[in-house]
Image (cartoon, rainbow, N blue to C red; front, side, top):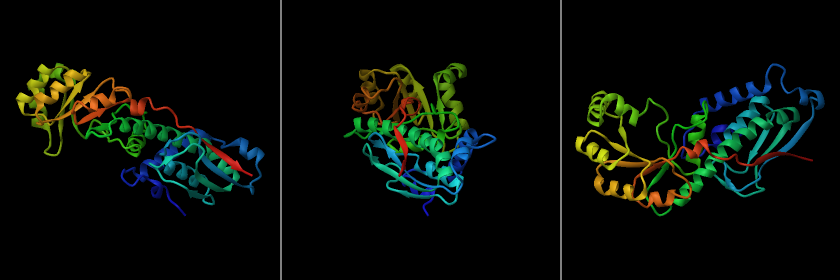
Amino acid sequence: MITPTSLLYPDAFLSPLAIDEAVHRALDEDLGRAGDITSLATIPEATKAQAVLVARQSGVIAGLPLALATLQKLSPDIDVRAHVRDAARVARGQHVLTITGPARAILTAERTALNFVGRLSGVATLTADYVAQTEGTTMRICCTRKTTPGLRALEKYAVRCGGGFNHRFGLDDAILIKDNHIAVAGGIGAVLERARAHAGHLVKIEIEVDTLAQLREVLGTGLADAVLLDNMDLATLREAVRLNEGRLELEASGGVTLDSIAAIAATGVDYVSSGALTHSAPNFDCALDIEA
């Protein structure tokens, strides 16, 4: 019997606890107090069924561990055969999972399972499209904290399935000084001095700048590890790379699109972060079809 963790993309981590929590929350939302009254009313208890989860478009699959966990949560008698695992590229019409077992459980799980696969495959597919535009460069495309509340771990995992990389997961795993922090703290020098005095030896410090003058000031302090270049045009990004001379890691952000990512990568920055990978990914079209 396959398990949710056996379907995970091997080069990315998603906690089994996060899978369980997400599935429990989603099923609780859908089942309510009385359960699937449609299936209870129309399908005899002993009825068996076989279904296939089908990709209705080409792209990158993600979320299969959650689909499997959803099915297994509703019945221990469901048998699932996986034809691919997360991060696989699939073609339109390709069978992804074959599911056999109690018909009621399969029908009840259908929408929740498809919601997980559709959402996460959408993120993975869009990320893969971005990554394809950076081929031939060493730049990494990263997601942001602009995620669906409660689904951050899942969506950031889906970004990895698409070949992208993760930015910080939350406010607690890196120091990222934004323009408002600078304004409140009294300037670049003051805010970096306070950050460096507070940071542990394993905590990196990144600071956002809007102009080349601010970048020069940051470089002069010697206190930052990385600089976020916010909403800079291509010429300014190229000049920032020249000024930096490889001293700090440079991240471009702001208004990044599929049309602009290749040109940004060519400037020589180390990273590009884009909230669009998660907040604007379209749903991946998939379906659960009952086989006669």
